[in-house]
Amino acid sequence: MSKIRKFFRDTIFYLTSNFFSNIFNLITGIAVRRLLEPALMGLFSKIMLVFDYARYSHMGIIDALDKELPYCYGKKDYERFARLRDTGFSLCMIVAGLIVSGILAASFVVRFTDNMLFTVGLRIVALMIIARLLTSLYIVLNRAQNKFAVISKYTILVAALDLLFKIFLVMKFGLYGLLWASLLTLVAGLVYFFKASEEKFGFILIFSYKEALGLLKVGFPILVMGIVFMTLTNIDRITIIRLLDNESLGFYTIALMVSAYIVQLPNLIYAVIFPRFYQAYGEKQNIFEIKELFIKPMLVFAYLFPVLIGLVILMLPLLVRYLLPAYLPGLRPAYLLLLGASFLALVNMPNYLLIALNKQVHIVFIGSACILLGGVINYMMVKSYGLGLTGVAIGTAFTYFIYATFLLVHAYRNYTKKFLSHIVFLLQLYLPFLWVVALLSLIRMISSPVPGNIYKDLAGVSCKTIFFVIGCIPLVVYVNSKTSVLTLLRQHRPRMN
Image 1 (spheres, rainbow, N blue to C red):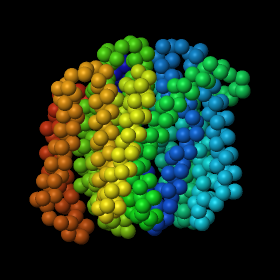
Image 2 (image 1 turned 135 degrees about the horizontal axis):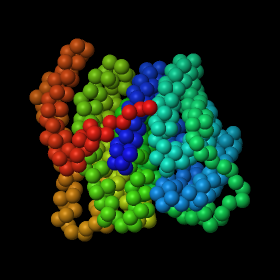
Image 3 (image 1 turned 120 degrees about the vertical axis):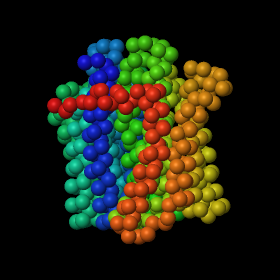
Image 4 (image 1 turned 90 degrees about the vertical axis):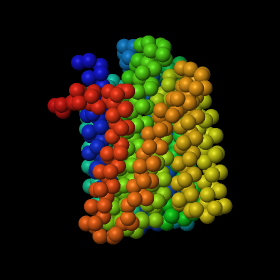
């Protein structure tokens, strides 16, 4: 089987599984929000923010494995592959065990808040960290060997179990049930990986300190980069926690939920691309020979991702109005955050290129500067201009734009330093976004307000969607002429055995 055919087979198989997974996750998100009021969802979002940061307790070792294992696999250095695999696993377990023990001990000794729910949540989060860490290690191991079928089946399994666990336990135990369901889902996924993976990790106490230091040297900068990026993408949630209340954060979870599902799509495709990108770089050792692999994925997402976002923006009011009416105040921030997500779809390939060139510190510097900028803008939007959640979403979307622009320019400088070439490069990536925004604005100008009748609403959304899709046809035609993405998708449809 040719490399390009295998690539598209893996990509479509992986995307298909995640498509069904996202359907399950969307149903789960809606069901949970119908069962819990916005204030409780805000508290849950606050607890999960702690989990998001605590799961980086691997000290960058997983990030190093994610880079080094595909590199070794591409060079067919299987002996070092096995050595890195077990060394990385052992280090992760030792470090994470110490950190999780500290969180558990602190939850019993330190009074973080008067809300006991938050304290219990921290204890459950400590257990979730271990389960998530082990799961992440198995994802890295299978992805490094291009075993996306195993990962795809895992994705569908945990999404289905998550739906069942959360609906049942939330109905019985409320927010406590939601926390325990999150833990049970992770444990079930880990059991699957242990049974489905051909290779297993081995815990070793006597390992190569040279390899261990090498993993930390490679991974720690990537870890810092990951924490910086996570802080950047959570700058809105942090602002709301600091300046507003749990109910406001609960309303905003609509924006967080929808944008998380949408941003996940490019990340899923990039998850198939980046092992091959590193493998190609390991074979060629020349970035100019892999320039096409750097440029084409960005072109595809620059032209097609804004179209998807536009469709979601048109359909979202219908979903919220009739399924989650208590969360209507979060609708406008969701529109703005979705538009900002268009820029996040463009940052993966610049990241991969800079990491391959061992320039992670540049990514950290750009991200840190944007965090400071985003924090200042969001503070001004809330405190100076009184825009509340809408102001937070505006500030966050603008921060994403600045971050993507600086990262794209800095990465592209490795190919050319000509100013005009950079302008053309950015215009080629950003014009589709402006096209979609113009179409949405035109639709808003010529359409009447939502009447409040479900049948009329459905008819209105259908008409807007048809008009929007027709208006986006030039974008699809152009990107296909440049990348042949639709042609390749038709030619390489995978068959699931």
